[in-house]
Amino acid sequence: MQADTLNRPMRDLRISVTDRCSFRCTYCMPREIYDDHEYLARSEILTYGEIARFARIAAEFGVAKIRLTGGEPLLRREIEKLVQELSDIDGIGDLAMTTNGQLLGKQANALADAGLDRVTVSLDGIDDKVVRAMIDTDVSVDTILDAIDVASDAGLGPIKINTVVRRGWNESQIIPLIEHFRGTGHTVRFIEYMDVGTTNSWKSDEVVRSADLLTQIAQKWPIVAVGQAYRGEVASRYRFEDGQGEIGFISSVSEPFCGDCSRLRLAADGTVYTCLFASSGTDFKLPMRTGASDDDLAEILLGVWAARDDRYSELRGAAPLDFPRVEMSYIGG
Ligand code: SAM
Ligand code: SF4
Ligand code: SF4
Image (cartoon, rainbow, N blue to C red):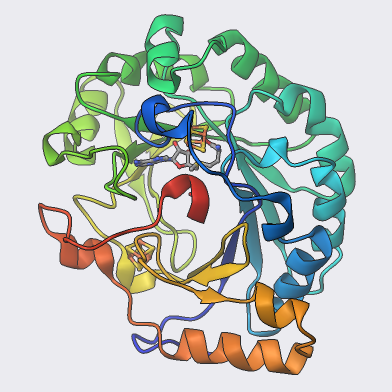
């Protein structure tokens, strides 16, 4: 096992397969910036063969979990072919995808057949008006709820529902979301709005602290904390005392969890990052396209991980640190 400078192993690989998205979530890809944005050209994006090659090398260093993300991963053509290649890699025990759900209903069965283990679906509310305002796109909540059912039937569950909570936008949706998913086996996870990138003009007073949500929820349903399932689990989990399932909180602003962070990120253009809040990364595309051997790539990766000292969320405190940061849609959430 290769540890970084803070003794953290390399365990999870997040792969952003595209920097494009069909949604314009206000907290991630605000329309005024991303409608007129220069996206990566096709030639700049790693092929499925290149992504799988990188993943095989990472697996040799202990990566056991892979998550496909973006941008919107289901926009990448025939993504099930990549899923198939990744699911064939020895040592990968968990292959997941995070998606906005728009195209999931159509693709869930092919993804499951190709070897995808599970999906996380992002959904910021149950009320159509609230969600349309958050995603700033003409897609209905029903489309996403139907897709969750199809994915569940296809064997991609239990499903995690990611809900970003942004003050002034969707706090009204906390209780309705739980009401909808309690007892279904799916788990809603509330995510503190983060200062990823700079285009969302993040302000700390728009963050709703998980502790406050917890108090609100516990007044309605008695809940108890569940211990970490494994080192590096990002969500704090709670279960309903009446046996109707679990909820989770991802509190990277109020309770940073860098100490256990084992995540390596491969952006769509082949740049490797060791933190969601990185300002620079290491290019693997050029070496891959100019004849580097697997041993050469392994050596570069080993060097990157051995030098890793990231702990942005712990250092941030109440205000974002002042340096340029890559965007969430590019690096992959
Ligand atoms: N498009 C896919 C989706 O939305 O599920 C995958 C990529 S998206 C960047 C991954 C996750 O990041 C989503 O669950 C989204 O809600 C979350 N996210 C995006 N911007 C965020 C922000 N500023 N703070 C917290 N979470 C954010
Ligand atoms: Fe697209 Fe996901 Fe970002 Fe929303 S959160 S804009 S769906 S990448
Ligand atoms: Fe990991 Fe960076 Fe997030 Fe800390 S801030 S948990 S090091 S991705």
